[in-house]
Each structure stands twice: as C-alpha cells, then as structure tokens.
Length: 179
Image (cartoon, rainbow, N blue to C red; front, side):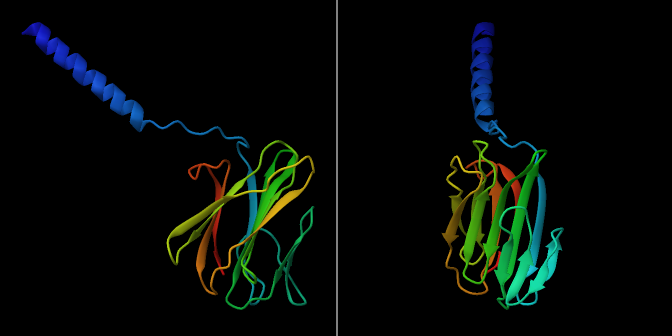
C-alpha cells in the first residue's frame, strides 16, 4: 500500500509539474530593452495637443510636429485624432509611428540601421478586430518606412499599439486615435 501511494503521489506531482510548465510562458527577448517614448495625441480639427509631451504647431492646413528626420504634418480633419510616437535609446531615435486620420494612414519608421524594428498593431474598437503586425521592412538605409492604408470610416476609435517584436504581448507603448 505504501508503494502504491508513493507511485500515485509521484504521478500526481509529475502531472502538476507538466501543467505548471505549460502555464509558465517564457517572455520574448526585448531587442530594444528600455526605450524613452515621446508622443503627442493631436485633435486635427484645431491642432490642440490632447495628451503627450511633443510640441504641436498650427500651420496652414494642418498641424506640424518637428523631429530630426522628416517632421510630421497632420492635415486638418475635424473629428480626427492623430498620434505620433517617437522612441529613443541612449544613442538617439530608433523608430517613430504616426497615425494620420485625414486619409487613415499608418506610417511606421525605422530610423536606425540596427537590425531591429518595431511592430504596430491597430485595434478597431468598432469591430473589435486587431490588424497587424505592421512594420518597416528594414534595409541598410538609415531611414526606412512603411505606409499602411487602413481605410476606416470617419469617427472610428482605434488603439495604436507599438511592440518590440511580432508578439502582441511585448509592448513598448500604446495610445488612442480617431479616424
């Protein structure tokens, strides 16, 4: 009886160990590690910065947000809410992501030839679908970018999630926008 109990206890512990190992999901490697994020959420009807720390300048026909690469211009779009996200490590900007509500375009920039990129997912709160991952293909160029035509209806609320890998659970930053 003692041997049967030990065998049963051993079998139960083995099963629990296997189940426990299935529950522990390894985290993906953080290619970029810790990044400093600067961002702006912009009401493109009046160029007001809704949230964030990037300066917004009202210009003819839209809003300008300056950076060290190609700057960002959001066209006037009443009811639209734009997003610009810049990511930096200790050596400078590594990537930026922009959502332009006027034509529902998502711009993803890889601003450094470092063998890595960011991945962007778009969550449509209207239909609860997640689109992506989208990313710049990456080249030997210092600046590479990808433009994605999302073609959402006016007024659709979106979540823009930037990830460090294709894994949706590897977040860098996320923010809300309106098409």
